[in-house]
Amino acid sequence: MTRQVFCRKYKQELEGLDFAPFPGAKGQELFETVSKQAWQEWLKHQTTLINEKRLNVFEPDAKKFLEEQREKFFNNDESVEKAEGWTEQK
Image 1 (cartoon, one colour):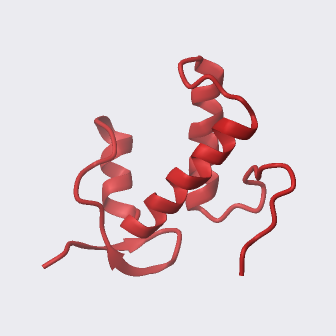
Image 2 (image 1 turned 90 degrees about the horizontal axis):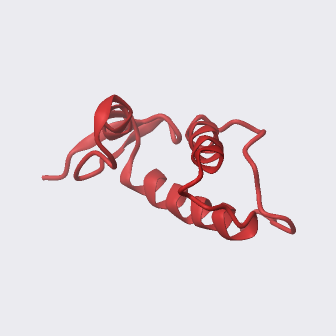
């Protein structure tokens, strides 16, 4: 049986992650509150941001930017960054 979580992005019970996405308290929080579906969508969005904005993920400013964007993404914040020319797929 798959583990279920109440996903903070979709506001419903969905299949949870198999393990915390990274160590520490933040990773544990994501493990407990983000669905597998939402995490996969974040990874795709994060990749787009990294590529479009040419971020070096080893730089502290880029890491901070992505952390902020991740929180906005999972909280359905309207101010989440989108790639230039991005249109929502229906």
